[in-house]
Length: 99
Image (cartoon, one colour):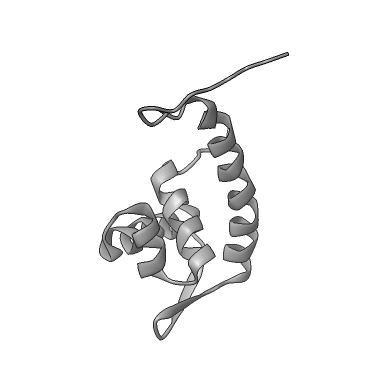
């Protein structure tokens, strides 16, 4: 069985990759830039692969990083889709079901 890295490491990497920016990914996840960077670093160490390289304020994906990001995006979208029906509704929200 494959050992799956912690989901917060994977989520941080996916957000950073999508934004091409550590600070952009961190903002989306409501964590510090340092926390997002450390999560990506731990993921790289766990997978023993370089996933990102810094290019000024931007990050560039390695080949391995691009492959991983391409698979994680749809995986997280499916998870979000799965939990969406359980999202709390704001006060005053009315749901009408009719045949």
